[in-house]
Image (cartoon, rainbow over all chains, first blue to last red; front, side):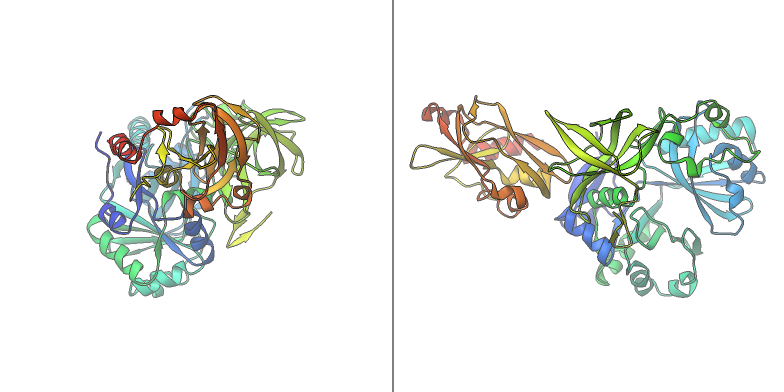
Length: 360
Length: 129
């Protein structure tokens, strides 16, 4: 199978990246040390190629109404142009098709960014729903757009240096808001728990922008550090922390599922009949070892399972997200089965780290 | 990247060095280290443990993944490198110095069943395709 490549593939190789097959994409997992890259983002800034993620534009007169039915979070919270919202897209049975960010561009244009591995399936679902409920809406994806995330306390300043004119446009941009700059789209969003931008840019312009950022001293960061950064920041990863078989209310996503308003949306009826019996919690390992996905968690209230686990470079301990019985409380000791051993861990409130600091 | 010619190698990417006292020293190869990335945890076998060839006997974990270490030949563990407990990253900086454990082989001739540097290089090249 030929792996798909982003427009920055040659740049990664030139920078010494170790490339891996990431869901059919040839992507950089690190450029040396994943731990160094992690600290680089927490302490200064770094850039990520996330062009494998897909931009989908939804356009037409009744787009807002359609998205208010399609998505579990409420797009009516988006009142001014450029504002972003994190949401799940659910099946009728309440399972999670994908998590995404939706940007309100104009009244007849919303832009959605979906995960790479689920993109084709997402678009097919959106089109099917549109054909049944809003046939006049157009849904078009933009694989020709590259996405570069620049993250860290110094990320915004570095982008302003690299991109003349961007400072005036984005200096006053609040978190979770975006602005258009010519053919580029600059959003103050990210997946690291640090400040910064995610920038959509036409594929043919992406290598030059990447090289300019590098000239300004922005270090490239691989998908390895992206995973430990997002885990420390307590952000879910689709396919690990939730999927089509997961109730979002048991995946730490209740804050994104709007069950209170009158609004109907796909999956709502099912979720109303399925009160959650589990919840997502943070774990910090007390013994030596590394927590990993699918390890069994033994609690006083029954068993659970780790959904994402790794070593936290910021805490210098192993941490995890785990789905456990709802009665489990922060501060409780639990046991985790790792190979032939039972290791001690403690339940914590996540996020574990953000803005350069441990929160534990 | 050159593979040391004074060592023997396994298909599971351990290196093995024969010492003058007839014991053997075991670590993981540069190739394995590169596949795994930043090491954060090492668990070596206890002294006195009897091992059969290809038996799972140790674990290394990087940020990315856990990997089992197998006994390259049969024998008894004579020493394990406790310095790696607090400094697993030394495997990254110098995998051919950062040994994991030593064994007294049941039969030192078993070393002949392992690959030499040339054979291991070929093996790694083929595995990449």
